[in-house]
Image 1 (cartoon, one colour):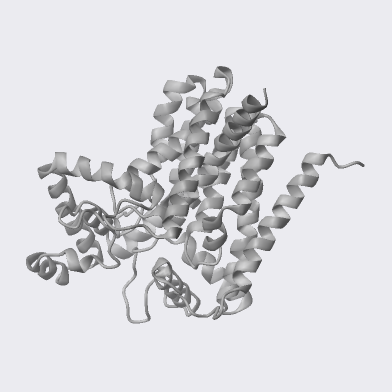
Image 2 (cartoon, one colour):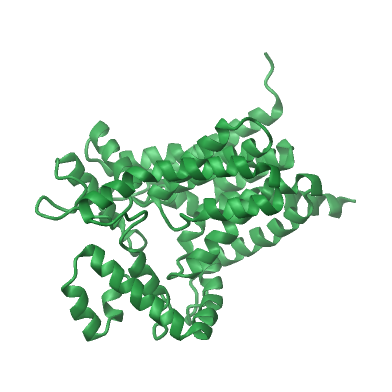
Length: 403
């Protein structure tokens, strides 16, 4: 049976994606040195939990430590499963992430084809993701980006398939996928509720399906919520770092710049109160302090959020001269955004409803991340949702230039 040219090109793109990610892994001098940089500084907060799970100490940071909810369980469980199968070798985590990211490149192709119904847009979007440097580097980091991105894009693909009338079970699959993504990184946990509201506005006939998606998502999160209620005394749906992130992100004196530790931002009185509090109480105190700041300084907080936009999406605007790496990110993201906007407006009106999942996710996530300390790696998982529009915009512009 003959294989069409689109399939051949897609296999080639996926092969390139795999080779680039494996090459980045093999280029690491000391694979067991984790973290290798400030960018990877959060890595121990995940793999130490995985180590303790394997050792039978429960979901905690040590044998003599109480249960924790500082990190949602998705990524520590992923690390623990890799360690259990292949031994405590960080490169096996990287190899698994490389394979997962190649699957994401394939999902980007599907996402573009579903919205634009053309293989050319799908191939270009998939190629762009295969070559996207942050995705390549993220697969080498012991961080949540790669795994989270896969489930976020899988959620978008299955949701759009469901919107196209492929059957209500896909709404359930999509809800479960988003639930898993939220157990890996919980920053946009309220998205299903926003999608439900948007469905009533954009595609009213889809509201029942999106409601099923929302319920499936809630059921997926339920075991984690019940566990937290049992072990920490509170039904926490995400993590106990929400208060810290809100406090850092809205700390007016520091300009919401993301510090490695929030301790340097605390007053002596607040530091004393926190030293006497447990994990859950500490989160509650910092949430209350953050909300007090927001309520008392509404105008300043809004202005700070606006200042965070270039920091979040372009990694510039911190008050110092950006590095060449930051400038490269800024330029590439600007190009993708401009092309993406052009690609979106060229979607036929009758098909534009198919894009509401991607567009809502990108916009809602950006707003949520502006409420905390902005870090450009937060938006790396949103790029695959943008790339189909950018690819369509690029092909549309080239067609115009030719004519």
